[in-house]
Structure formats: structure tokens, C-alpha cells
Amino acid sequence: MKIYGHRSFGNPRRVAIFLDEKGVDLPFEPVDLGAGAHKTPDFLAKNPAGQVPVLELDDGTCIAETQAICRYLEDLYPEPNLMGVDSLERALIEMWQRRVEFGVFSSGRYYVRHCTRMGSRLEPVQIPAWGELNREWAPEQMQSLDRRLAKSRFLSGERFSVADITLIFALQGVTARGGVSVPDDCEGLKRWLRDVSARPSVAATAPPGD
Image 1 (cartoon, rainbow, N blue to C red):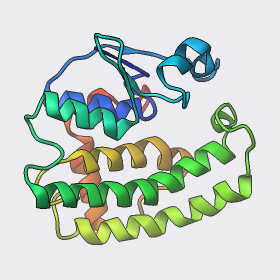
Image 2: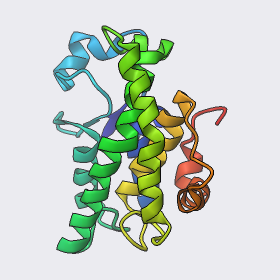
Image 3: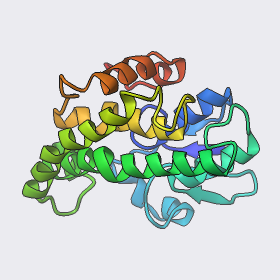
């Protein structure tokens, strides 16, 4: 098996953290998005959406979408569990995962794609006003997460999960690149950020210079 994408950049980093948490070593094959390598016929045959990451199995089967890849890997390597051990925990993790994805993650992502030079290589038409509006929403999304983390060690409870991986990627990978930092009064979120940033899986996959 191998994963298309750079283990320190973009959504492939989420998969890299997931694998490191499980102690599983899979090769990553970088894809030069700036040069349009994700739009070549060969790559589109693996993922018609033209996005990374893509997990290619030994038989040539390709699985795209970060969460789908993590679900497959969770079944292959069930310990340590990162997606829930019973119905309730699985539901809670999925709930927080979705809240992060549609909240602070989306806000930062839209800003980067519509208001930065890097985003111009990924977005056919940039709409700066849309990006700026999303940037303004980011602190509000962080306040909501802070209320949760003021009373919970991790998003879904006392265990680190895939929802926390999505959040650390959002804060370090997209929101920070939009120049949005955690508000000073978000003590719970800041405590969580310190704790999770120190995890070996997160430190090992940090982009150069971070």
C-alpha cells in the first residue's frame, strides 16, 4: 500500500498523523499540486476528483477522501482505537469531526483558497470577499470549540481521536495560514493546542519551518 500526497502538507498530513498514532509506516508519494500533477490523466484515473490523499492498495484499488482512508486503516489496524469503541463513542467522535470540518476547518480552507497565492493554484476563480468573510467567522468557531475543551481533555472525551487530528490540522495547517490565531480568552482550546502539538505524531509531521 502507499499514499499519494506529502505527509507534512494538506489533508495527507491528517492520514500521516493517524498512521503515526497507530505506529504504522506506509510510504507517501508526493504529488506536485503546484505543477498540476493531480490533474494528469494518470492521477485522475486513481481519483477522478483530482485531490489528495489517495490510498492505493496492493491490488491497485484506490480509496480517496481522508475520512474514508482513515476508516479503512482503522479496520486494518484497530489499536490504538481512534474512531470509537462503541456506538456512543463512534457517534460522538463523528459529531465533533463534522463540527470541526464544517466550522473552523472550512473557514480557514476557504480563506486560503480564495485569498492567497497558494490558493490561486488550486482555485480556478478566487473570490476574495468570500475568503475574507470566512476568515472573520473563524474566531467564532474557535469560541465554540473552547467551550467544549474547557471541560473535556479532547473533543470527544478523555481519549485522543480522529476528530482531534482534524482540529490540529485545521489550526496549524489552514487557519494559521490565514493569519487567524486562537483568541486570548480561549483557555481550553489553548491548553488543548499545547497538549496536542506536543504529541510525537503531530510534531513529526509538522511542515518544515513550523
